Amino acid sequence: MAESTGNDKAAVRIGYITRVQSFSACHRLHSLHLSDEENKEVYGKCNNPYGHGHNYKVEVTVRGKIDPVTGMVMNLTDLKRCIETLIHFISIYFLLQFVNWLFFFFFFLYNLPIDISYIRLHALCKRYFKAPFSIRLLIN
Image 1 (spheres, rainbow, N blue to C red):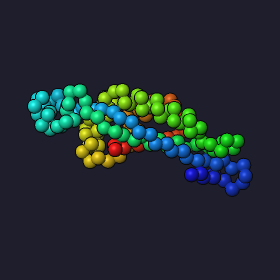
Image 2: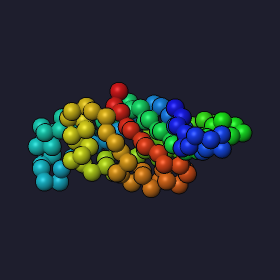
Image 3: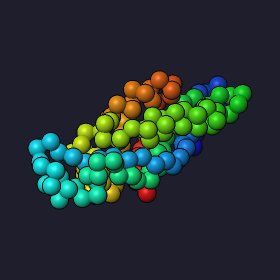
Image 4: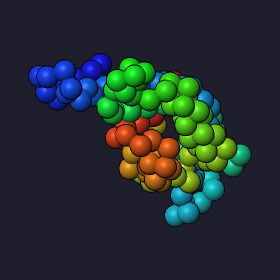
């Protein structure tokens, strides 16, 4: 998708590029305010001490100026490499370490896509994406 910021031929053209990639990661829901038995009762299989896994899709959209020579906002290979770095960062740790547990609990409870730009990954993403971006994490 592209948009123009003016009517003349020298106008800056703005475009969007979106890439979706899949990955697997685990988490554990556990409250220090509950006993081990209460945690098992409340959180079920999500309380497994070794973690409980899900398959996810991460969707990254980058907005920026369209290069007049290449016709690209960003090289898709570079975007893929950046996303793979983020996926590696997410998937090797429990997701619960990076997401407020209550917010994460409701994410699983309602099985809805969430905007994860509020979590610590936001800072990591800023390092890789020069243009404004959005990230959505979806559970499969």
